[in-house]
Length: 147
Image (tube, rainbow, N blue to C red; front, side, top):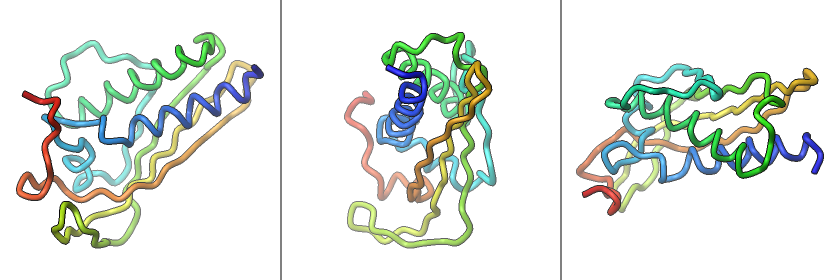
């Protein structure tokens, strides 16, 4: 498969996985802990964290790199072909309301932009925009995976 298709698939699959309910902190959606403080966050996807993630920001950093690496490996893309890879998370302007588990919640849209520069200098990107309400354990359901 051509490198172009591989990296586009890696970036898209990474974003789908990263912005999903599988990105959590203590059983709650990870981004709800961060949305109030994020203006813009930039994460180096090629830098694996070795420290134990003990805060929402640390989890966001380490899980992004791990999920990107997992998708790169699954696609069979050689690591030497990816010169740079980053994720930019930006809170978009404005407040919106949405129903979360039957409760009206104010929140924000977050833009996730994953970019990669390949060894030939070509740049690829994929983006997702998702609504995120600030963390509220009275409204959110905790993941059953957390004991």
